[in-house]
Length: 283
Image (cartoon, rainbow, N blue to C red; front, side):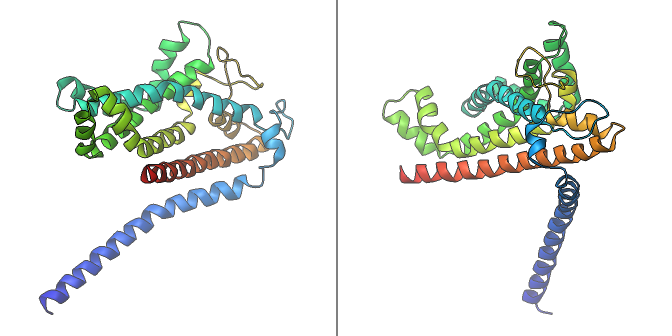
């Protein structure tokens, strides 16, 4: 066999291994999605989205309070995490060579690897014990802590990818460093930052452990931020570990809705990225 033939054979083998690795990674995901959809689709109906949970022992009802609670908790987490995460990312990219920037980067990486139950315990000590009650604010605080490192690192990496000529051009026109960052660099990196924020929201949408220590749960419909609030993840956990078959059925439906929320977040991230890229291209 010639040298060219051996190279082509080796290339084909490597491509085959790569394709096999992709299949191995997708097969478990396909099985999980198939199982959740097949089990949950039978219980998803209009009542599931509009009705409240029924009393213990009765069949029927829905998770309207849990769906609303999940949206409220995610909104509170985003209000806290997006400004902090973006500004932290800007600092790490602009002062990349300083010791404090390296410390912030290390802290973000460490926080990103901390188990969610540990973050829940920390939020319990900081935001629950001093006020002696569970609340939506405490739940949003815990989820926000999980979002901050993701947004910060995403913002930093995307700002570092912006061509240096854009910064130099802004500074040459007389803009200050801060104005160059917030009027030139951030808009250029905005599509990727928006994608990172939406993916961070999808990441926290499926968390249960932090909410057990902070927002707890609420069988009633509540929008008060200083009171316990229901969430899909905690409700699914409660129903899945319960003794009633109807609870198990609704737990599968809740799991399917969670998967759909993550899917919608991913689609919105892609749509926002494409729209912003077109706006920048036209500009």
